[in-house]
Length: 604
Image (cartoon, rainbow, N blue to C red):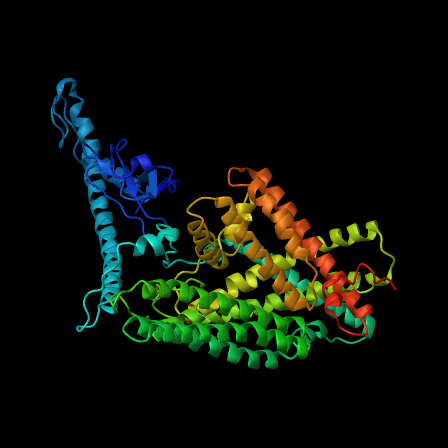
């Protein structure tokens, strides 16, 4: 109800204040405790002689709430009218005051009385409103907890599950206190888009797309004498897309049926069946499932010569389904293997597993926070923006990359030409990075999250503010980072006995580098380890040297400079290799022909 300002204290910044009494500052000052991302809660009370307590890990300090200006004007006018209607006589104190020595007590009380009463009434109203909001949120949390407790209740013919004493120590130690917690929250860009200044940056990118469209029309009109937009690059990239979608069907069915059935086989074996037979059949099914996901998309892409965008569909789904299968088994199998005599065995429902396969996360949970309804206009808007980003990328490649690199392999090699091509590719490279981020990590994932009412939309953080590459790696793609942190870093750290954090982190870099290079190799159809070298030779050392203790704007400028150069190197070298293989084809396909860079020797 008033105007105020506050200062945040983040996690770990004010641990000494948590749960301790704080004497409030002077009048009209309150100390709040709040959880970031939730409604602000307060403990208002009397303004004098009352101690407040900080009730949260996140804290707000110096929170001054002042009376609105309009209320102050009305109060002062009222006081002026009262003073005019009741003129004081000589020797008689003003009404409402109390006689004090010196004759000044009455005037003080006249000005303090109405002020304190109005302020107390105002704070009582704020208190009521905050309590109603807190009660509503508490009821929702309790309802969710009750529902989960009912779902987890064992059948009547089965005793309450007992947990072996060493179960938590052996199976949960890697993630103890660091498990992924899902809560309802918006994506960061959705929050920033509510600010008009940030929306202007978005409008600038839209204007850039319009300029590309107008320039294309102008060039066609001047060169061809007609207005006609040709999307040759787009139609080529998405050629044979129906074949890719048909190939996706057996991949999805294998992921839908095999891991769940393998878990059920292991569950029956633990509850009294033949243990060896059940475990053997489950492992055989998982081996067949891995073969289907590993071989089928590669076979289709190579034999039918799928273009890059259609290959993207297959390889992204291949990696996604493998990661989801592993997460499901990693989260459910330990409880099954450590059960004794059927106790504690409760396979997750098939519907929860089906929901997990479509929801935008790689960490399996039996339940997720859900939003109350679906905003179909929001879904349509995100799909339209994703399509716009695809068109944008085609314009950038067609106008800024194809004219430069199409004939570069036909010229003699020189260091000058290579350096100039890298510098020329920095701008389209950073544009492609931003478009991929916005199209996939924001638009595509938010569209599916909205359709499935998936509540946790934190698919990324403010990676653009990073002053270190370690923070950039953690915040660029939170979906993949959570998987790597949970199942590679934490499990690797646990296997190493809680020591050798550097080795566990190196393992994360190695897995990430290999998977990224595999994706590039699959999409482009050749092996050129640019991404692998950038990850291992530059990314690893930068992660340890540019760590979180590096702060300040200069480090953010340095990070963006290295991003520009890295994207320029990738775009330049991959484009040169792509056109070199078109201009200098080999008479027959061999293994060494696939893994040897053609751009080093093709200069016709």
